[in-house]
Amino acid sequence: MELKYWVTIALIKEKVMILRSLDKYRDIGLLILRVGIGIMFMGHGLPKLIAGPEEWVILGGTMKALGVDFAPMVWGFMAAVSEFAGGMLLALGFFTRPACFFLLNTMIVATYMHISNGDSFVKYSHAVEAGILFLSLLFIGPGKYSIDDQISSIRRTRQTNAAKS
Image (tube, rainbow, N blue to C red):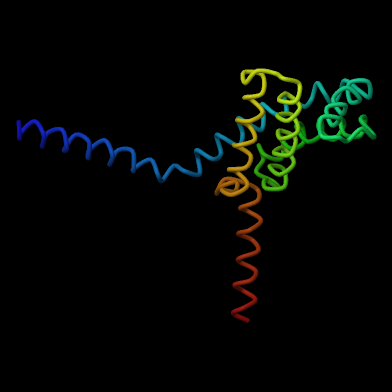
């Protein structure tokens, strides 16, 4: 029994070591996540954006669930732009945190609307999941393979050079 125990421990340690070796790919994981989710949200937003004012009024009407009943066309347009442009910015890793902020707010409104309509969990779970994802990306940031990181690197280099002068 003791040999079986130590063999099991050795196998677990080996698997943990393999999983830890994936840490060096964290930024590639963030890139895949950003690009995949960004493209998907562009796909959600584009039909809403090109549908025009009639669709924007319907979409913006969801704000009534929050007690906001003015300018539904503007709110609908903003939601469509948030999904399409926010998805594009997310995929590029450009203004990632502001994009996630607007996408998160859009998902909060969508979730609240579904819940207030009495929809089942299956109906609003996508908005909740996406909201959790965008909140997480607000904290994590875009990762190394992003336009945001390239801009930050340029700024850091300039500040370092300025400090040396």
